[in-house]
Amino acid sequence: MRRSWRAPACAVSAIVVALLAVPGAASAAALTTPNLIENPGAESQPGSGDGSTVPVPFWTVPAGGTFTAVKYGASGGFPTASSPGPKKRGANFFAGGPGSGGARADQTIPLSAYATIIANGATYKLAAWLGGFASQDDNTTVTIAWEKANGTLLGAVMIGPVSAAARHDVTGLLYRAKAGTIPHGTAKAVVNVEMTRAAGSYNDGYADNLSLTLASKS
Image 1: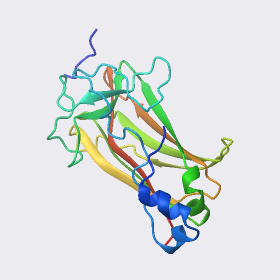
Image 2: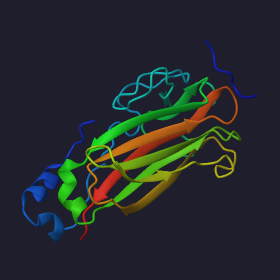
Image 3: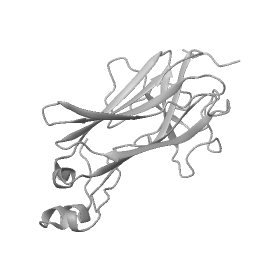
């Protein structure tokens, strides 16, 4: 029986800075950025050992929200270090949290440092490991909203959800990714992680190793 719950500054590498400082350099050589998402794997501070809600640095969570970081192998049937998921994983993963039908967290990534390559047709890759618990269809989606500096929406891309059927009713996480071209005029990327509960008392939408990278047009 399923358990019941109990009582953005983005780093820019030196090579990126150097390329953007030289006129024409970004278009002369292919450039791929580092991962632009901060705390992409819930590793910025210790995760919960029982699924309770803990602070998650770099992510904005609505007041009263239950978005949390949980340790692999936490008590209550959560994924373990050997469950399906990233080969290279840290100690924690993201979860929807206790008593929550829906949980979300957001992160805004300024892209002004990449204005030149975006204007020249830069591409993106969005990836994450997404999953849930056993035969329950609790799930996670990750969405990127491409926006102008004034907040005007230029487009969006989403990965997930991963169903229980896709996981063969096994607790764990599966890899999902999408790639495409960033809309011209994009000045920021707003990352939204959203977990939805379908059954049970705990929101078992899971996520780990989120990644957003940009690449210049070669």
